[in-house]
Length: 346
Image 1 (cartoon, helix red, strand yellow):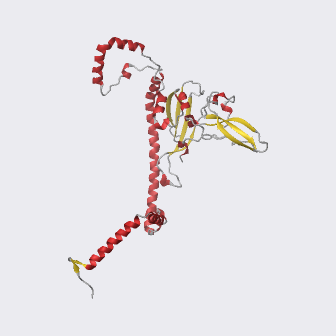
Image 2 (cartoon, rainbow, N blue to C red):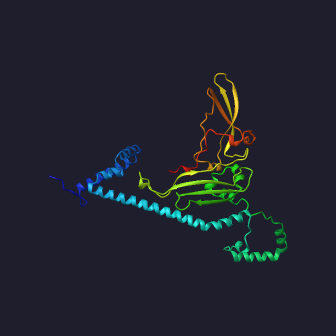
Image 3 (tube, rainbow, N blue to C red):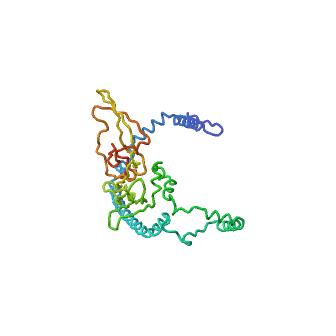
């Protein structure tokens, strides 16, 4: 006969079940705190098929048919989205034309070719009234000294080193600039963006305008970005808007001994058989902002670094770049500097 005794009004069977549940919970907590158990559990979970395709395969045929219809709708949405971005590009082109007169005037002020009028130079600050009151008081006290200081104040042309200052203070740009790039960037006068003409493939060009300088003869350096705004036929669901599919730089016509994208190194070559050692100098790629303009499709001829039957050691020469007799344009480094990341998007 079953024992139906009670303890404090609670059936003994219920008390025993509660104890077992408590013990099970404690054991589970201990197991789940064991790293080996957790690792084994994760491995089992990783091996369980749970991809969307495997899930779809388990559905009834009627449901699969409806899902295929949804896929067609999504592809059509992707093509509409592509058209949307094409029209956005057209808007960018339209408003770029409206911005350009203002950008042209900005360049004139920066270079000092045009002096802004009083109306163009007027700017109201938030604390204008306080500044005016403080200025009036100072004028009454030190008017003579102020006139003398104004007469001696320098008046450089335009806004010196405007673009260089921007490069130095924008993190994304400053990371690309080496110390030996800085004197060159001080000659940068303007940066322009030009969009492709209506009806032409989507693209844009960055133009870097330089004043005459001691480093290269180009007045403009360019980088062209070619874009695509259409879903991939093989994977239309991956479409996320326009992407850069190619980019082309330009050739920089460096003046003799001024090419900062290469550096001079000394190599010691030892002949395996004879044991003789000779020293040669070569120019190899160097980190520089101006690698940004490397033509994407340019490449070296793959010449071997050492002659057959020789082994070499390498050490870098400091400050010898300008002392070489060879012209930079005739040097063909072993490898091209790495292309900027934006050219590698696919």
